Image 1 (tube, helix red, strand yellow):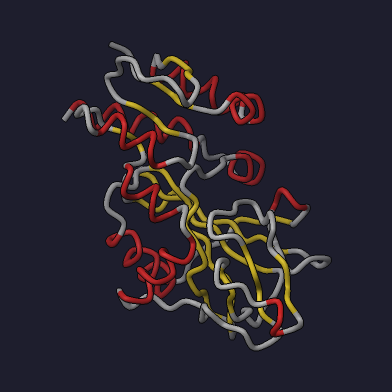
Image 2 (image 1 turned 30 degrees about the vertical axis):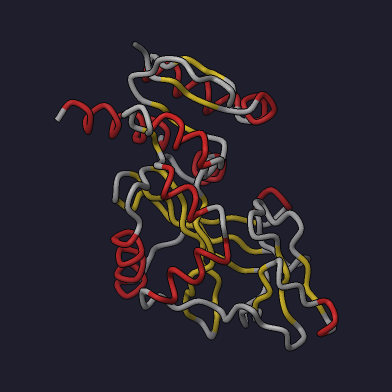
Length: 242
């Protein structure tokens, strides 16, 4: 049996570099989300936790796990989980303008709007108090419980700082206190293997914003000399070996 890498057709095309590198380094076969055949293990790059559940029910290990993916891809559930476990977040279920409104399962800044009226509140979406430092956030990449790198993203034209929306990106060194905060979050996230943790800046300090389940690697390759996909594949091979 071979490892299986699952991407949607569209995402496999958009992430061709990553897909080719993972299949080459791990000897994996690229499959679409409806695949239900044999696998030594599965790398699920779909954000759909039900795919992971399907394989886990047969005793096949999935990176990332179904429980992790389910939490990461429901922003409100994730905020509630973090707050319950003592991680600072910007308040949610917030309806005092201005407030940020975003889909619970959104990615890449899609569907995120700044609301100026209380009438725009929607209990079916995440409505959240904005951080003080708009257009500025931090992404931390994690592999197998280890912090790999951090990159600061900034936009002077949009309150969303996403790189894919034109934000600038520069490598960032975590302070001791920030590293401690990141490690506390990592300790809470069972089943996560390769993912990103995003933070906003409020009053000059980082505040948890979201988990990126199928985290991208483009920023890391453009802004650092880290071969993060190779690290990911090596960690899988080393982990399975022992």
